Image (cartoon, rainbow, N blue to C red; front, side, top):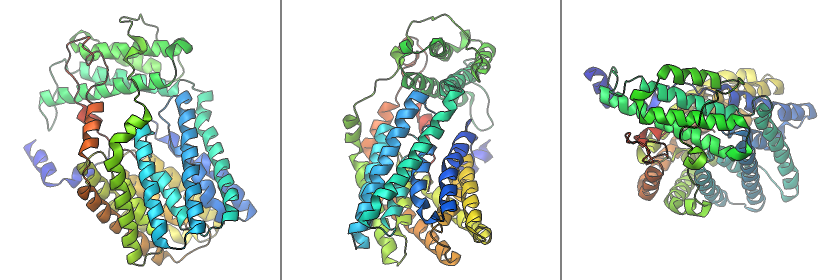
Length: 495
């Protein structure tokens, strides 16, 4: 045990690069993005206008969002993501049409990146967050453009976004309560895992029983909180059928088990969790507490959530601008790659930001090697190019939930191949530019993170996570409060 702990302390990269378990629904965003991207790209291929694929890709990538949300909330989230994408794209296209200075374009891109970062964090849109939007708007800044072509390009993006919205909502026809069921099952399984410690802890290879008990309690509290949020965002319980009310009562049972593990039956909890999955009838239980939806956390107004994010906005704008300027100074033709690299780094604290930088660099370096291997196949024709991009889209979404760097191995060659939709390019130059921009963006972005501390935002994050309104946290029981540090996760982001 001491040897393992010593190795972890001497090699911090082990934790940063460690692969996690894949998401339970990893295949859903992977399949959704392929279904969203393929028809527009095939249509452009048949029309001989694959050079316009950048605009349809902008709309298609909206299909990456909101897969964990109930369908009523998903419909709203996808609509807002599409509108935000169109707003950023329109701003970038107008700037590209009017501005003649690359410095001005980088500045516009940095401001857009800061706005997108703050809005995505304040609205809690979830992965992939702001980086897809920043990638779209930043790439559009450096594409040849004129004012008369902007309406047509925005029309293509809007049409693809509407198709992506339909793709995202389509599973609801078969499983209308799928997200709520998954969240409830996860809460029941996590509560059962904590109950199985017997309330006195368990054993682990590298931790004490008390640490193991704390981790299982924190994991269960986070799962219960996530289930509460899912049920709350799915609509008012009074407007739902019996399914959501039954799920509410099961979440209450998970809360009770979390507060009093000695009195709970883990076998029964896991049996309920299995029954909840799929489309089988949800077990009907008595409402033991009557607390219902009152435990759902209130949502602060958007303006109040924006206020604490000022340091984050300054940090993002500064880091992205300096990264872009540095890329220009080095003579790189695509400074938006450095800008996007800086934009993807910023997490809730400096440690996570550093970790994301390491993941980004390693994933991109491996990704350019994969690009070099794929280029001979992709250059055999436009059909092969489109098929390679679709395969990389699927791979990125399938792998990124395990670790950001692993997903980046597919994201990087995909981004490089997208630049070739308008015409094949010299691979060596693309690889060199991508590597240099990645290193520049990561170094300058990390420097900006150190230069602009974000202590207020860290306090806000800790305050918001200081205790989900579960039975244990509201004083309805005397159970220990969960350690919310386990909720400090890194979200998957893209190009």
